[in-house]
Image (cartoon, rainbow, N blue to C red):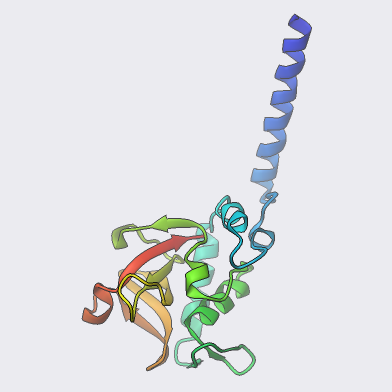
Length: 180
C-alpha cells in the first residue's frame, strides 16, 4: 500500500513539474495561434482564455494599432489588408495577427474571447473594447484600448483614429472589454 501511494505521489510531482516547465518556457499546449479554430466554437474560446496576453505583447498590440492611425480606410464588411481597406473588426484582427495572435473577424465573435473586463476602470493596454453603435446592448463595434481612457479604432467617419472612451458619443455605448 505504501509503495502505491509513493508511486502516485511521484507521478503527481512529475506531472506538476512538466506543466511548470511548459509554462515557464513560454510554450503552452494551447498557444494563441492554435487556440482559435473556428469563429463560433465555444471550446476554442475556452482554450484561448487559458493564456493571457503578456505585458510586452499588449505593448506591441498598442504600438501596432497606433501605427495605423490615418493610414486605413473604413469599409463595412471588408478586410482588404493589402490596400488597407478594413472594417473595425478586420482592423483589430490585423493588429493582433501582426503580433502573433489569431482572432476571428466579427466584433461579436471577438467579444467571446479571453476574459471579460466589465468596468472601464479595469481596462489594460491591449484589451479589446466593444461598443453598441446602433441597437442598444448589441455589440457591433470594436477597438483596442491604449490606456488613459483612450482607444484606437477604425471608424466609418475617420478611418483609424484614437478616441476618448469618455467622449459624449462613446461614454454610454461601451459594453465590455476582453483581455486576451
